[in-house]
Image 1 (cartoon, rainbow, N blue to C red):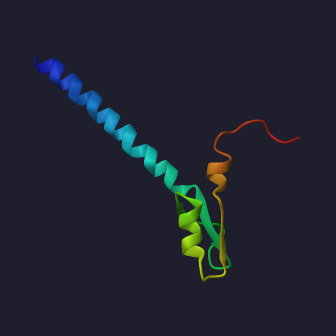
Image 2: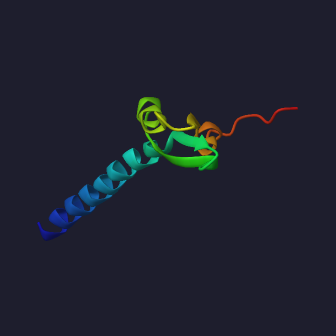
Length: 78
C-alpha cells in the first residue's frame, strides 16, 4: 500500500512539473524591439496584443521571437 501511494505521488509530481513548464515556454513568443531594446529585444510577451500594448506610445515595435520561430528546426535554406 505504501509503495502504491509513493508511486502515485511521484507520477503526480512529474505531471505537475511538466504542466508548469509548458506555459513558461509560451511566454516568449513576441519581442518588443526598437532602439532601446535592440535585437531580439524584450521577449517576455505571450501574445502580439500584449507586446503592442507595451509598445504603444514608444518608438518600438513587436516581432516574433527568433528562438520561437526557428525552434522546430526543419530543412535549411539552400
